[in-house]
Image 1: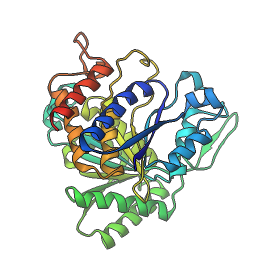
Image 2: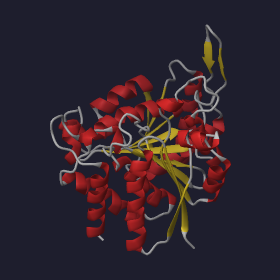
Image 3: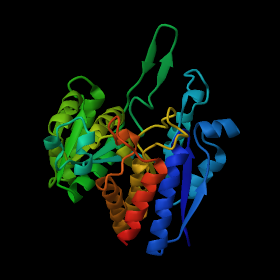
Image 4: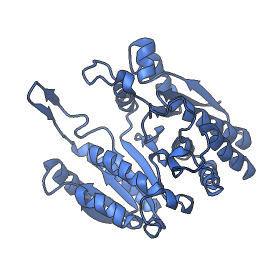
Length: 356
């Protein structure tokens, strides 16, 4: 039986980068003797235009049946009215909720080929290999909200169960890596963070005493992420802090276009997407960086399908292409020549096939 992969290209540059990721997965299937069935569906602004809903019922049913979901990006100026009753981002949030994905994994790994693309000194970038585990279903993004003409309110709320499950997953990954977990909070100010810190200490102390635990306040974490990035192993944090920290961490890799993510539920069934947005300003120009999307496909292979060897080979192909000098516009200094989205995808595909 074929493995069913739901393909949600979304908006903006989504279809362009998705094309390259699907080509990579097709090569994985062909060379590895696997059977992948790709089914496309609408989400976000494209879905609003076609159906009036940012997550149509057909898309929700497909994702419920699929073995894994590959997502491009959602949103754009066309649907940016903050007072609109239906917005593209609602489709993504609804999908995450329907799939029960609560842990968002965002790996941040530097490579010598991209040291020059980062604003940090090369000496700080050596040996950086971080896994950020962001809680995805709670916190201020999902709390009660209220607004009138002169005031607004967004409630940040966390339940014990939400904290326990994401800390456990992060600790399991730390145990498989270098054995260190950094919990990021704002416990000097916020009660939600005090609860987060106490439960994290409880879980690590009782169930993972072989894992070293470090606490950092989020403001300190933003500084240390740039001043000593190689010291971090696994970072676990709440929803909003994780969102902000991983965008900052993208600068270690040279571009937001390089970072993939995997959102997993209890059964490790997942939603895989790059962390960047739909980049409507460059959509349709063929210059978007497909690396984050292809690396998200590699995470799909690793965490979604258990194909570790194929995942490793696809990741190596991405960095081999970069090492050979291929760069999209976001990674290229002003005045130097860059390659197209399709050419970058082709360079990665060639190296993947050559390594088979």
